[in-house]
Image (cartoon, rainbow, N blue to C red):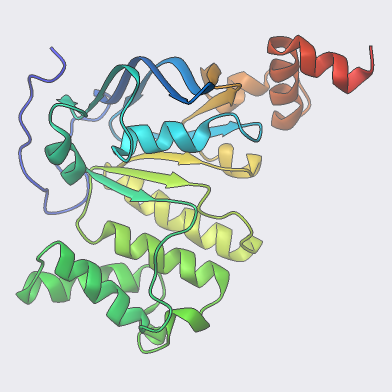
Amino acid sequence: MPGSSSHPGPPSEPGAHPVAGSPMIQLEAVSKSFGEVAAVSDVTLNIRRGDTVGLVGSDGAGKTTLLRLVAGMILPGEGRIYVGGLDAVGQRSRVKELIGYMPQRFGLYPDLSVGENLDFFLDIFSIYGKERTRRRQRYLGFSNLLPFVDRRAGDLSGGMKQKLGLACVLVHQPDVLILDEPTNGVDPVSRQEFWNILAEMRKNGMTIFVSTAYLDEGEKCDRLMLMHNARILTTDTPARIQAGFDNLEEAMIHRILAADTTLAEDRFGT
């Protein structure tokens, strides 16, 4: 039964204890409104442990709100959320131990160096001694930031800032990584480097839930969720979603127009 599992404690590596293929994130009829505006409406979904799931959709669809709900940053108005079998509301503090969340504007300290920013997050999670040294080397190393350890974060390029942000999120080795358009506005080379890091995390069994504005990134995911007007329109593999269309973008537009007759009328002037 959801919520009956107990948290076995942080793994020695990301996602070390989950069983691949079993549910890691479950939403049951979840809704969230801000005043009269429905941001998320009756969303039910399941994300398996170890999967990378991409969230795409139109502007204002509710993607950020959905990610914040899963991350425990805001509470649902209706419905239930489970992460790792734990109730995300009733067992909120324990769920937060499982999650690493990187919002669109991650809070780096521009006047601190790369190393000092990472040390700040290591302090937050009370990671000291040999384990602190190991994780510092690991997460700066695969982010290719070790040569820049003494550089001010404010002097980094956009892509390097995002990689540093990711390294800071990963230091407590979460089971679930939630990313809100982490590569938006980043150059193509840095985007590829960022996704190489995510691929490495996935190999270690981490569950990744990421929103993106780039459909080439969506193609790297195990499954895609298309969101529009606060609802999930479809969830499937990128290949199945694209089937019958020349490209993924065309397939997405077709599904949005089919679900939103008002938008279709505006688009075609009928």
